[in-house]
Image 1 (cartoon, rainbow, N blue to C red):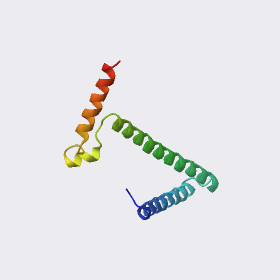
Image 2 (tube, one colour):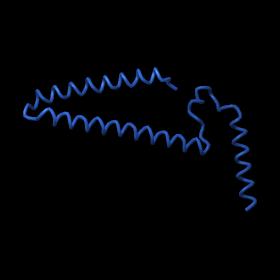
Image 3 (cartoon, rainbow, N blue to C red):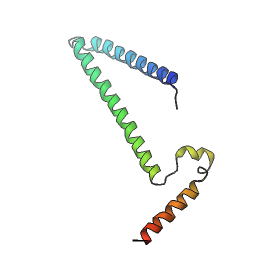
Image 4 (tube, helix red, strand yellow):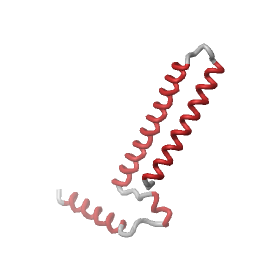
Length: 108
């Protein structure tokens, strides 16, 4: 987990990168197609950046929901695979959950 200072630094670098790339695109668009106004190029570029940011945010959201769904259905968190096993007590929790499910099904 990043702390506040690290997040600010990361976001500052991303903002600088987007600004520089946008400036280069505007500059080369003006040189390549001089008949297009600066406002039009800026509008298209803004729309493209917003679309890209929306796609990235949607991708993060879908990935987070997928991982949550998998974990809620008994999957192991991939970070535990670095340790060559599962978290302590997970086998017991799964065994208890399975026993409870079996008990619920047999009582019906």
